[in-house]
Structure formats: structure tokens, C-alpha cells
Length: 299
Image (cartoon, rainbow, N blue to C red; front, side, top):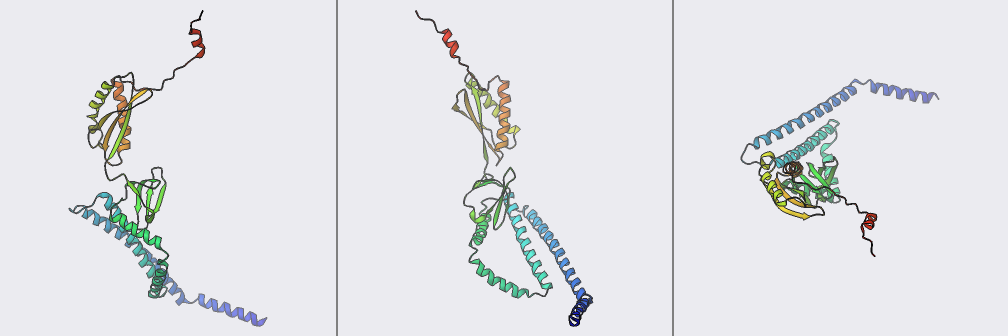
């Protein structure tokens, strides 16, 4: 019993000596301070690199050799992501060095393990290669409105491994670059606004066309997103109670929806001013009893 008490007492004394060891606490404080300094330098370096990249793209935009704004935004975000990864890696290696960990041996071992894992990471390699060609070939850029598979929206980010597309209702779709087989880009070329307007069969179609043609000449002055004077194609369909006229307007990329809504509103006002009726649903009541009463009696 006494022997056990002595062993416990010895262990407590040894622990107390370690806790009261000034040199140990100085080493802990020094390592903690080094880690804090490294983290602060990491944040500062990250901000400096982002600022430098932003200034580089601003200066380069004033030179004759410039890219489109959409491509500049994509390249700038990509370079910022790559720089962030590099800074984080250097910071992690430096922190490990403060703990006297053999970083060179760790990196060499990680290289061997990475080589072994690489054979099973074919999808990752395919994503990175696909991401490189998406950016290199300028298939789409940050800010473009695209359709990828069933997702449709604006490109939020293009990385070497994934692409993020945000739909107009707020959903964020994330695609591995290697899985992107077909892309529809709506932001490269001008869009076409298609507007159908219905005229009643009782109305004067020739007058309606004349009024619309005259009004179309004023459209480019009112709509800055309209590239040229819209065109009236003529009668599109003959409906159950209306004649449908179709007109088209070439707009800047992805401006066709807002322009089409404005054109429909203005068309309604113009047609009302000229007394041209836009048809509305009509219901004809048929009574079998009244028909029997109106049938003349036979002798």
C-alpha cells in the first residue's frame, strides 16, 4: 500500500515539475506565437496577391491586347483560387516545420502515396483536364447564362475541378468539369425577342400591320437593349377567335425577355389608341328548349 502511494506521489511530483518547467512553457509560447504570425502573414499575402492580380488586369485592360470582360473575370478568379491554394500549402508546410516535423520526408512520402492514389483518381484528373480546356477554349465564362444538362442559370465560378451555375430561382448547381458533355451558352451572341400579338377577326389586319410597322420605327429610341429596328413577320397563325401576328427584335445577349415584356405592353397601348381590338374569350350559349319552341309546327 505504501509502495503504491509512493508511486502515485512520485508521478504527481514529476507532472508538477513538468508543468512548472519554464523552458517548456517558453517553447509552447514561442510555437504558438509563430503559428499566429504565420496565419497573419497568410491572410496578408492572400490579400496582397488578390490586389496585385486586380491591378494587373486593370492595367492590361488598357493595352491593345485585351480580352472580353467575361473572360477577364474568369481568368482573374481562377488565378486567385490557384494563388490561394499555393499560399495555404506554404503556410501548412511552415506550421508543420515549427513542430520539428520532417517536411521534406513528408512531402516525399506524400508524392509516393499520391502516385499510387493517382491511378485510382482518374475522374479527378479528367475533371482538371476538362476544366483547363473549358477555360482555354473560352467555352463559357463567369457571368454567362448557360444551360448544362437540366440546369440553367448564370455561371458563378469556374474552377479546375468544378463549375458552379446559379439558377434565377437561387439554386446552385455544382458540376464536375469532366461530366460537362454539352453546354448551351446564351451570352455570346445577340438574342431574339419574339412577340405574338392577337387581332380579332373583325379587325382590319392591314391597318393593324400599318400601325405596328410605324410604331416599330420608334422602338430603338426607347429600348437601349434593342440592336436594330424590330421586324414584323406577318400572320403567324389563324386561331379559333384571333389572327396572330408575330414580330421579332434583335437584342443584346440575354435582354430578350425584358424587351419582349416591354414590347407587349407598348403594343397594347398603341393598338388601343388606334381602336384595334385585341380579342378576348367569347362564350355562345345554346339552349335546346328555345330551339324547340322556335321550330314551326308541321301539319
